[in-house]
Image (cartoon, one colour):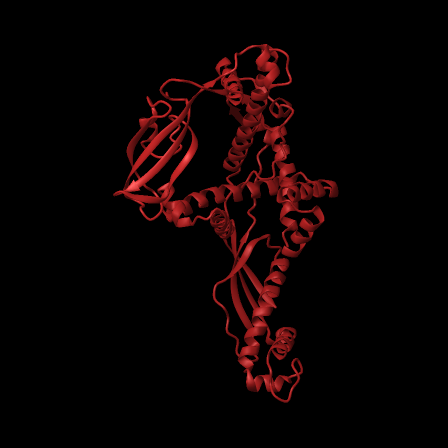
Length: 451
């Protein structure tokens, strides 16, 4: 086998390969065996058909074609090893070769390759994140949310107002004909929440228990979709939402704390932790974006295309699981498929660049992944998938994706190095380190950074 490599760009090469016909002999023998096991010829047991009979019945050209298909991947791998090509993604044949009997196999393939990336000194990278500030009204909002959860409903003898809860009966008709499934009794509804039919909340305000009213609404489903329906509504009861007093007794009801001050302090700590995580993620994203920019990382087009296809398929599968289609999603989002493709391409390009950058850093720093670290990641992912770790690992091995997860763990460790070494300040000029950002609850080993 003779091969040459031509550099097309920093991320792509073309391999030209020529294989003498004699070197195709193992692939030809395998092709004869494969075809013999598939054809049924009278007088011969399956798998025992002589080559001459296969040539006569199936044709020598078909056998050669089968042999070529088997030989090409192996020949590409041999050329990749010979020229030390750092292959990414799948090779793309420029055209499928035709081989005359006895003639050499000659073909070309284009392959995305890992670009040479010059890494900057990480300590020279400076990024800024928002200052961590917590206003009193944010804690007030947290307390209000907690208070809402412990609200009680009390029946009142007055007309309904926004925020009240009412028990109602509904009945819809179109031109005097009952709408199938258009009647309901004793429904609980918050006035003003817009959770039921358009127009309902407007007529409920001012209605008292025992009163009825009608309104017109447009139906969105069923046999009468798009038609105006007359809906009668009868109020059974009106209930007022009563919030508990904000005092130490409320703190004891809603939490493990004895005083309202202790509860507020705890809520402040929780909000602080959440904001620290947000700071950490902002710092991570900005650091990676800056590194990609400074290192001028190119993105291999073929790898990006594969990643876009993968993301689009994942999006389609996710939509199908909830009973929707891509067309319905596009309609709801008021976007074209071209716009979605452009968004996916932009995200995939950035993701691929980040992966290349972190792989280069991992090589430069000789980052190793221990069995324990790899096992921990497998357990973590198996838990999320709801399967046993061994079963999950066996699936990975069968599908050939265990290496990809190993790469994710290694990139996660390289990312941790980035975050330890870059200079991070907040908007007020305070320098932050990883301990400040973690806040005791964040995990800088975020292996999904590029998804």
